[in-house]
Image 1 (cartoon, rainbow, N blue to C red):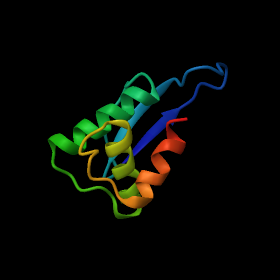
Image 2: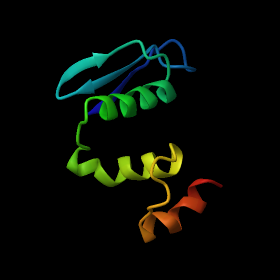
Image 3: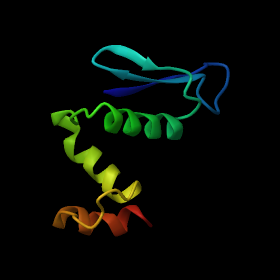
Length: 88
């Protein structure tokens, strides 16, 4: 699972395209921006009941619990200490 950000070399602001790729296949394209693509990726993971990639498991869990506030009451101690730093 990954987000692919395609930049236009002549424009420095927003990317030209943001796509969601899972298992080597482009699943969603023209997401608009990184924020929308992240939200769509999390929705896709939830809707298809996919497991987080092992290498990014804890990154996705922090994203889910801190930023999306899903199951946020059950935070690991490491995440509890990281959360205030992220919210600054």
